[in-house]
Amino acid sequence: MARVELVMPKMGESIVEATILKWLKKPGDTVEVDEPVLEIATDKVDSEVPSPVAGTIAEILYKEEDVVEIGKVIAIIETEGESAATEASPAIAVTPPSNGHKKAAAPEPPVETPAPVKPAAAAGAAAARGSGGRFYSPLVRNIAKTEGISPDELDTIPGTGLNNRVTKADILQYLRQRTGRPATQPAAQPGTPAAAPQMPAASAAPAPNTFDGHVEIIEMDRMRKLISKHMSESWHTSPHVTSFIEVDVTDIVRWREKNKQAFQARYGEKITYTPIFIEAVVKAILDHPRINISVDGEKIILKKYINIGMATALPDGNLIVPVIKNADQLSLVGLTKQVNDLARRARTGQLKPDEIQDGTFSVTNVGTFGNVMGTPIIPQPQVAILALGAIRKKPAVLETTYGDVIAIRHMMFLSLSYDHRVVDGALGGTVLNTIKKYMEAFDPNRGI
Image 1 (cartoon, rainbow, N blue to C red):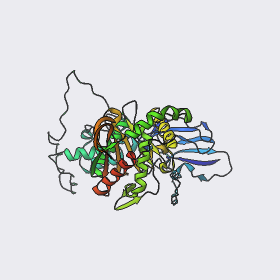
Image 2: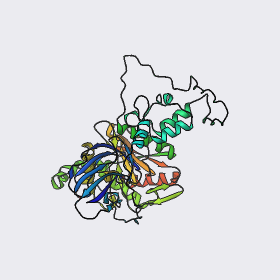
Image 3: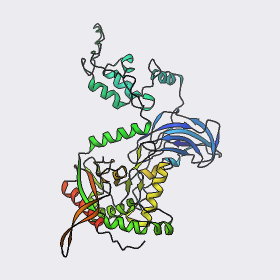
Image 4: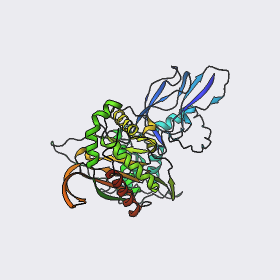
């Protein structure tokens, strides 16, 4: 029998781990090629991991709710064959971005098969839980040991991880708020009487919140916790600057009103303002490619492809950002089909992992909620995001051959948030003005 390793697949350039939600197979079960073996959760999407081969599940190496690093072996599948050598699962291979530009593939290091859990290891696993059965990762327990946090004190730290698990960020935040004792406790020297353990100051633990009967406590779901984490990290990573501009979109509004029924009859798709605005954004990026970058330490990564992320509100109130790949290669019809398809599948939970990664510039429509403008937070590792405000009828000054006149026009605000580490006000303002230029130059006599 040949043995094939099923590994935790790579789900995106910024994702380093995933949580096992549910095993769909158990040891001894048969599995076909591409048949789902387990469900996992990454930053934004729950996904199924298929089997790369047909065979029998021989071993399952991690439990449900375990957080596993990308590339780790999570199961062993036995297949028919005479070779006894363990084969690497093709799931570990990183799929190149579907943008038409190939990246040099770095050779993957061989993945070691974890040794079977021995009784001593099982005892160590049991020790990883507190007195109340709460699980603590080895890293958290090591930090607690170094900082002199007792098991009882560790049990009092609020956790933001899965099932209230204490994360590295949680324990470091607790240490920052902790007062009245040194950061580390010196080890006792041989022959020296051990000092009595120093109790934490009464003010060290955060004061418990007290509520009356007029409030409801709602636990964050997994996606909201991840959104909270990523938004906070982005705010601390990128110094945000936001520029604003007002745009006359009267010609776009009139064209859409005149052609929306014919457009749907011909292409079977409703045309909204979003693909029209994205078309203008793509043209501006082509004019100013330095906005289509990411930052890696002190290096600027200039992307030769344009992948537009479009923030989409979900029915449960959360947010997800599906990505239109190679937007510069799509016509208005192609953009419309992509926008409608991604938005529809986002709201029904049917997006694939690769459809929310590799974005190079994002757009969010705050006008959907009646807002005239917003200051959006940049999705890392991008350096800019455009907010589209509500379209409103307003009096505006028009320049004509007969002089200036005041007319009722359809106006909207655009706001561009950008990373001031690499995008200065000159570039950010110029990009925003270029988007305005293309939107106001829309041809009202354009065909469909």
